[in-house]
Length: 169
Image (cartoon, rainbow, N blue to C red; front, top):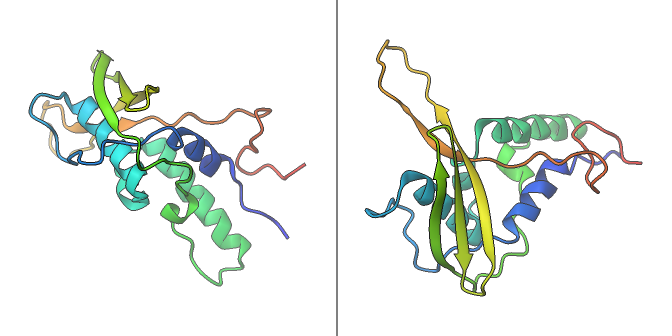
């Protein structure tokens, strides 16, 4: 029996295991926060709630595409008996719902990438990298249309994670 590639799910699980936002955090942008900080809070809040569908909306496009490819592979592996969705490829585990985000700070923002540090109530700090994703529009407007997205690192071979498409050893 073939198993579906665990690399994306494991990488996200490891990333999410340290993220738990404040219990009462709003999913909306706070007036005093920059957009990258607001997106980092949304990501952390969705991790705490286990809301994978909402989380996919704040992940960078390449990460979502990797999940879509993994879902397609998993669907093929079950012989087409059912279609597996990208959000089913992601499981959020190991989050302590009692730990909250005590503060969030924008470390840098060059317009293309930004780094946000979340400090948790238990003293841990988590740094997130965000990327600006341009929205493709049909008009020739020069307005900057797009949004900040969370970058999920791709696991490299040899770090205890199988790359997508590689058989188990």
